[in-house]
Length: 306
Length: 308
Image (cartoon, rainbow over all chains, first blue to last red; front, side):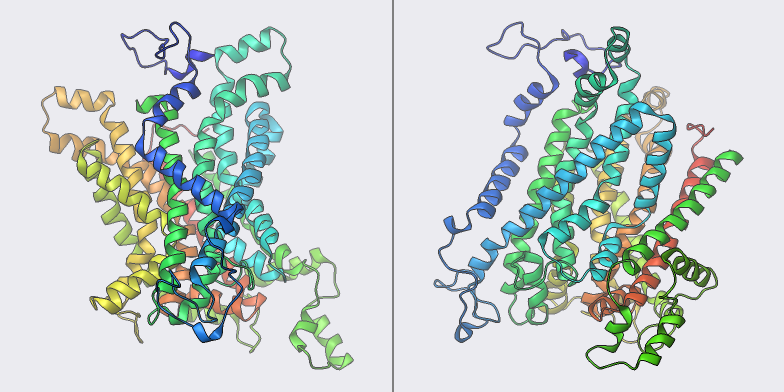
């Protein structure tokens, strides 16, 4: 199983099993190879640091600011950035730095929850469709075609517009419902290519059950492209949530979210550009971190690119 | 080949009915009383209520409602807005604006995206390649509404290079800034896809053969590799039409262009379900048709894949 990381069509003069320094002779897996490569990659380190920072900000916003984002005074309305209010204040006179810090939670929670469940659905159904084939595959694939035919933003607008209250979990649910089709297609085609390999035949010949073959052989070898795509999806979901909140169909006030902050400020952006700049910067940096991480993972996990 | 096209059209019909059913179910099956919502906080006479209920088939079962809706859609009746305008009229009036914007964005996306991708691909791992790689990730990371406001603020207002709104009546020059914003995200994807596809093709046997024959670099890339590298890009462009539609909603609302996207945005704010559903249905149909056309073209253009 270990030497699967080396593509069969590439003939290399080097020995097939690479020994990592300090562990002579021990075969390495795709993931430990990838990990050794990733640690030395600047793009991976930068994105990992940014992601950890954003997650800490989402869990413990008070580590970064002691100001209550809802403690506002109209006397301080629309102040530009100063030593007292680092990011200035908004129309209600709330401290914009505190609001920006507290805005991380909505984005990070929605990004992670949506991607987790969408990936779970995609991996489960995708491996069933790819492994079993036949009728189940046809039904699942046609259903995916249908979901795929409605662009994500349009679907979310229609659905969220019809729903009355839009809390963080409603937004999550809608994005999960429409978020899995691409990953299911990826998983299915990945399983299709793994299914035909010799070691799966060998496991079947040894009498392994379908469940065991899928969980022990097909999944570990077929899931890499989905993991790469899922990492990027976290960033995409965060951007979509912000866009929906900006269009007034996502989170609603008094929730604190970067998209909502920009939406509230949209008529005053020309006079007070800081209202756009800071939430926009945090939003873009978070999305950037996840996309960069996905890129780094793909480079490390795809042996063909080496 | 013929059987593939027939199957693909069959799939299109299935997708069409199932997708419209989904949209319909999402909006009209959600609990709530639309007539009550129409009346707002004013009392409504019982007779009017009954007339409206019958007029909109609200007393019939869900599937019957869907049937009425679909027969309407197929006859070009997409419903009416609150102020009694045909949704189809709204679409007819606004569609040209969106189409102009989308075509401009599309041209920018293809020309700049493909050139940047080729530029990076033939200089793999050089400085320019890294520059294109990093800048595309950066552009993809900035959500389109942030990018739109930034462009408006910096290029439109501070530097004054391009008009901030499309103007009335809109001019090509006025569309330039919104079109660049709308194109930017997909442009980055096109550049990355072209680059990776080109890099992959440059390593293939037929390129080595072409080089061994003594063909010039220009001919190897321009004739042999370029055409094959564009196949995945063309497929992407069809799928990407969906993102372009979502982007148009944001861009039109920021740059005040009276197109379909702005109509969706305003209808969303006004909670006009019929208008939102009508326009989205039309957009989904356009999307499905475009994907059908590209899939069939793909089958004709790429003989390497056998469809049976």
